[in-house]
Length: 176
Image 1 (cartoon, rainbow, N blue to C red):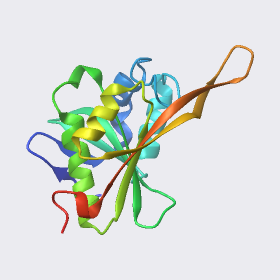
Image 2 (image 1 turned 135 degrees about the vertical axis):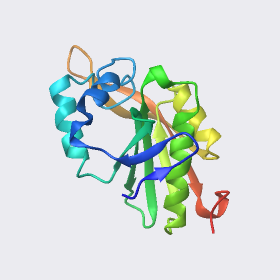
Image 3 (image 1 turned 90 degrees about the vertical axis):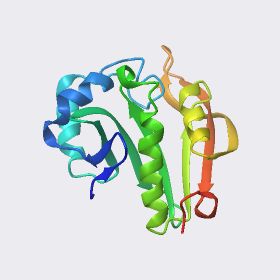
């Protein structure tokens, strides 16, 4: 991907040497609480950084030379539709970096011809759904017990609700 530069951030491809910076936040249980995986160890983050260097769905977000988080943007099953996700280091939270990075990537996505961008999150993850709403995305659904990433001690799935958000190109402020 050609890097995207905003007022404060650079969005770029991951590099194989981003493992330590990725581990700084993906190794934190609180950060990945709502993700489909648990805390990642350093070796896993080193592997992920190398894999993500060749995976355009993952975009590294940097403030200066510091990796502060990442945005995920992948084609959805529907035509001209993209799925947005994000995970950021809590030490850099509260500064609007996630909003700024997601907005810049969605801008580019709509400029390239996308029709719709969608996102999902756990309703308990207030920071995520508030970010999606700041972006101007509309909550289209509250799905009851629609997702499971964990199992109970007896092996049964632990179900949780999910919100679904979306925005159309014609609704996006910078769309052509």
